Length: 499
Image (cartoon, rainbow, N blue to C red):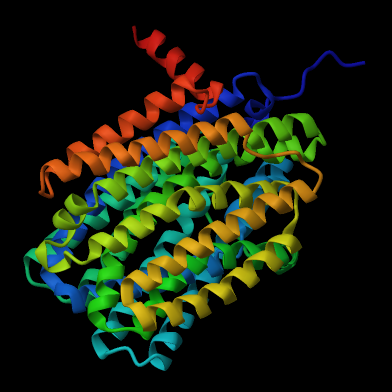
């Protein structure tokens, strides 16, 4: 009998008692990085929207949404699958899988670029937008490798590095956009800003991931087929669920005037930035959910899943209050007076945010349970309904109609996901006390925010109203048990250590 202990593995942290704390603190750090990057994105968006005007910004935003759709579809579920496989495998098998995945993602992103150009040609994009689409596609390919290098960092709960690499990408892109707008560049060069952003984030990711994953791609057709087979239904289901919001932007562009689509585009830009926070938070907990589901520890999975849903809906409601009450200032900063009609659109998008955060939680819970076909059925249904509803409502009521369609689809998808999790045998749901606390606090916060706005009219004053609304919400939810205990304990522990 040998007394030699097995060599420690980087994923051993997932089984340790500190795993939950690492997820909470790591997710918080990722959100901080993302918030800083988002501030830069907001600043660059304000510059670009003013530089291009409503019609030009509509084209710019539509190509960005097309890029997001292409990225999500041809990711083919490999991001979440890669985290799961990295956790499940060890040694040379893991290293080989990661090297092949780099090759596979480069190939898929190349196909995505071709698909974007074909869609742009068929849809009758202008020559400038066609060039911009091609440049954005090259930027998409440049981002494929650093995204793969981030997988082992997420799987080993080194979440701060994941957030830092993404911040580098956002910062470089924002800087390029501002510089290009300052020299009078058109839509195409502005879309080309994705290329330097991808290359710089590639260098950063390669430096950080050294030792956790191979830095060079490897060709293995059999392994590629294995990964694609394993991810097929999973990938289609998750990709469709991720793209339908961006498809709404494209459908709006094709269904209404440039003016109305431009208003929707400005508000949707803010909405998409905020929703990414949900993906960051939920994705940070995904390795633990995967380990709990794989070990058949039903009680641990239900506990973690319930706390996850409660936590992300809480966060989504806070962002909803910021966007809804602060909409006049946000629109003023991003677009100026010419985008004034986008305030109502932004408030509708704000109403959708808690549902969007619940969608993120529900989708990752189903992924952890390997309910890929369920994801596929639900997401296909919602995508078809979303396209039809958005086209009809955007044609009839412009930007507000498109935003209303998004509110409906977000809550329909969230409800379907959480119902499917329960039908899978996991008793995951928001507690009644938590739900009542969130609803009551949100209603009171909206009343206070709206009441303050009636006292003084002005975009700048809406920032004070939004702050008062959020403070009211947090105080009431904390006092009435709407905040998960794990969050309050983590915050208190962090404050004690700093003291």
